[in-house]
Image (cartoon, rainbow, N blue to C red; front, side, top):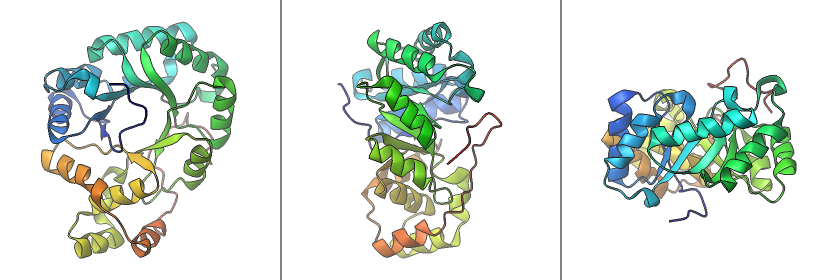
Length: 269
């Protein structure tokens, strides 16, 4: 199967290690997830690959994403590292290869690493290519460099406490789908009174409310969980239609609370 669009929700694997990663992927696929997200930096590609191969779900039915770490952005390094990722993932291609972070301090020119990523796509190592943690200006630059080659997604942090509006709206204006990582703000959504209230009124969980809010913005959430019950609930959140009043209440929670903010991050919008 060739995917023309990102599945509406994915299973994130950040911080999942060893057998937890393997079993979480296997469980998610058994529940109906068809979008699995990993990265070189997560150090779990092998376990993710094991989870996929042992799931019984044909590889062609699974949308698999990995991300290239910022120490592998020189052209030759990038291609070699992607080959290594494919070996760990036990597949001959990924559906989506992303640049995990822009090169810190522009040490490697964007033209070099995006050109190499496009070469990897042309070689069949990745069906689609994209970016992660790119600012509005960096998206503009990436579009200019890649020309007619589509940028499949910009994967950025999105949750009720970091709406990331400028980046989301700019990406969508450019025709780039946004994938939202850390959609549950590493569990903080469970503690918020507004999300708790909406969840009580709707017989949902705060996590489901947060995921439904993200999806309502046209953003693809990739929540991470090792528990099948939570995975199932997260998947079912796609069927939740929030009212305009509920959306406004969640919109008001935005406080620019960024969780993923390493010292090599770009100057955020």
